[in-house]
Each structure stands twice: as structure tokens, then as C-alpha cells.
Amino acid sequence: MRNRSGWSNWPNNQLTVEPVIDRFFARAFDVPVWSGGADVQELADHAQITLDVPGVKPEQITVSAEHRTLTVKVEREDRAPYVRQYTIGTKFDLTQVQAKLELGVLTLTLPKAAEAQPRNVPVMVA
Image 1 (cartoon, rainbow, N blue to C red):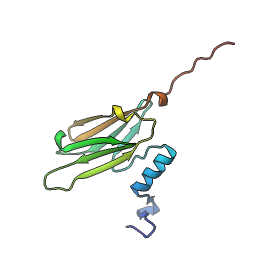
Image 2 (tube, rainbow, N blue to C red):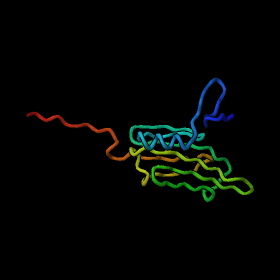
Image 3 (tube, helix red, strand yellow):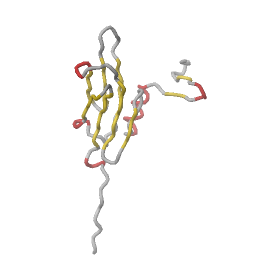
Image 4 (cartoon, rainbow, N blue to C red):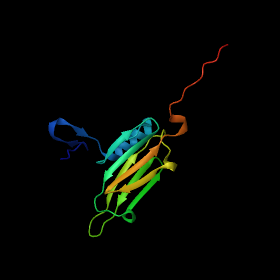
């Protein structure tokens, strides 16, 4: 249910913000926005986005990255396209995204950029 302010009211008084506003805040504050019905895990060196796409063939899926937005589009016959977008912070390297389809589950792996990965800094004696 949408009210005039652009917010959606959900049961138990939870609010969700429009995806465009999510992307604005993600770009302004350089944080990833994980939304759109996916399971997301962020690990030390990468993040994984997992989407259920039963009965879909690899040729029906398009994954693209533009600016800091990762887009997944699934096109099936006799159905409207299924499109999900994720705004990704600069700590992830979108040039190295990998997509794997296995048993109706699409897994996207986003490696962290080298400068965003944890590392030890040696302490020198003066």
C-alpha cells in the first residue's frame, strides 16, 4: 500500500524506501543497497547475491553493470521481464563480477576491490 509521501506501509509498522531513493543514498554515502528479493552475504573478500530463478536457462538471463548499479534481467516467454537492480558501493570491483546458474539458483559473486580488502600493516622499529 503506497501513501502520498512515496513510502510503502507494510504490516508491523515497517517502512521501505523506493529503490530510486535507495540508490541516491547509496551513491551519496558509498554504501551498498541490497534489496529486491535476494539472499546476500558479505564476506571478507567478496559478496554473494543469490536469486531463485527456477526453470530459467542461462540464455534467458542478462547481468550487467553500469556506473555502480548491477542489473539482473530474466526474460521468459509469455511473461513480463523480471528485473532487479542493486546499487553497489565502490569497495566492490564490478569489472570482476561472476554469475553462475545451478539448479535454478543464480549466484552473483562480487569481489572486493584490492584497496577495500583487509590487510595487515607491518610495524617498523624506529
